[in-house]
Length: 490
Ligand SMILES: NC(=O)c1ccc[n+]([C@@H]2O[C@H](COP(=O)([O-])OP(=O)(O)OC[C@H]3O[C@@H](n4cnc5c(N)ncnc54)[C@H](O)[C@@H]3O)[C@@H](O)[C@H]2O)c1
Image (cartoon, rainbow, N blue to C red):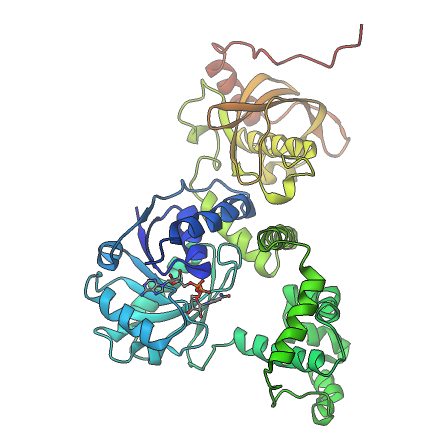
């Protein structure tokens, strides 16, 4: 089991702890604040309900979380050390000196610093080549971007290993090879922040109007195409050169005050704080975090459907998680066919839950449909087979809801084949969280010729696979919940 040491467990360190832990790493925290354990557990609770459900694939078991009274105990033997202490260079230098005295010289030391260049962090270090910037974005457990900033003293193999680890954690390491204060993304945010301060100070817009100007328009656009791709589209068929020619001259217009910063007077701070209270004060910070996480998960899952941007990254991560796992391959890969076969293993996504706080009934059907698809693939009715003109169509489904299940819960579906002969396929799915039976789903399907759209016998290899399962499962009792329907009243 790989281990990560988290040095400084505040907002950002807590997010890193969750990211590692939920991806199967052991996590060892050092933070002198007596409140650190409580704070990390709060971040973890948010992460558990949101992060696992970003994935549509089986997940690794959660790692083990431990808290350590001294830094040496936390870093000894760790493969990755993530420093997230306050943004003060002298504190960071002191922390590096202390942890380098105790850590494995081959471990990656990543700093979450928002502003310092890696060369500044490396100054005076025992082994400067071990220290890189790995700058995350809040919430670290959901947002994939990590600015991996390095200097020439960093060994190429260590940088490659850092990049690989971040990718395995479902993140997107953006390697910034030429260091600059505040890296890349925060420089944009700083520019936008400065302009927003002017707009409020000059009474042009309130905090709420500025937020609406972002989230009703370009904010949505940026989340999927960024800046340059968005502008390329805006240039139309004439392309990027045309776009630049059209809008380039505006840069000389008095549109922007980006070079100046408004004076940060008490008056300006009060004005912004009061407007922000009026705008968002009705929600607690915890509520706002939950709203934010719900929205982020919903948007990223929508992008998965388009296989684009952050969604494409999530799809790649799912493919990695599935590779060689229990939900791939055919009948030959299943060790024991005499028991119900695992056909789904995943976490409940946030956007599968409803106003009652539990999984929406439509999503049970979605989960069972995924199990049916997996069963079809298992017997040889995969995409290649369907392309030859045969498939199964569902004729009837019956779902029983037996217990509640919430966002983030890890669910598994096991499938018994009740009939699998000729054109008929009758499956009985049981959904569990741990040992608890949550629901059952029964579906009856017919093999269909995709040209005539009429029932037809499946290919002999499918018949043979069904026969193997039929033979292996013949000793199993008929499930108690099978063959039921909703009774007529009276
Ligand atoms: N907050 C953000 O949005 C954000 C985003 C990206 C990066 N960062 C960077 O992450 C780092 C941490 O920021 P944060 O927002 O989590 O701050 P924070 O104040 O929430 O957390 C800092 C934690 O470090 C602990 N700490 C202090 N001295 C320590 C020491 N010597 N050893 C171990 N722990 C110590 C504190 O007790 C605290 O829990 C900063 O470098 C910051 O620039 C912050």
